[in-house]
Length: 134
Image 1 (spheres, one colour):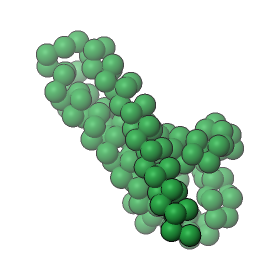
Image 2 (image 1 turned 90 degrees about the vertical axis):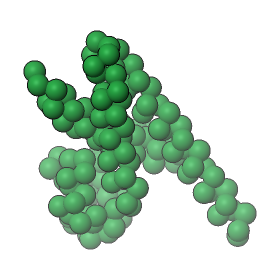
Image 3 (image 1 turned 30 degrees about the vertical axis):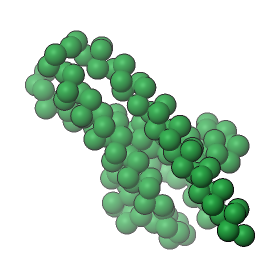
Image 4 (image 1 turned 180 degrees about the vertical axis):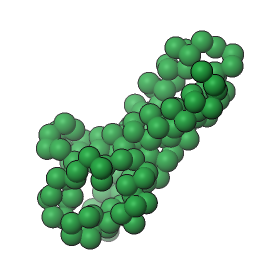
């Protein structure tokens, strides 16, 4: 397969993982399940359809708003998906030529864990600042 194929695939997988990481950060910090209920708008509680849940593309098409109620979707969701997609491309680009593809998957498996941990730390720090300012 041509090398550009691997880069596109890495970006798509990375963006999808980034979307799941966003869900993990949001739900774990609130003590909710990461699997249930399915993705929904926090304002109107309508379940998000699969075609409105495509990483990066849906954010752009919907202009960062819920299709049903028009509530804003936080920009950090978009940045998380984009950042993880780019991160996977960088990992693949730096390791792909020198190592077998399965070795490239090791940092790709570790990156989301680190990303969730950092996201949770940031979210907890923001909550601490809000509590102290009240």
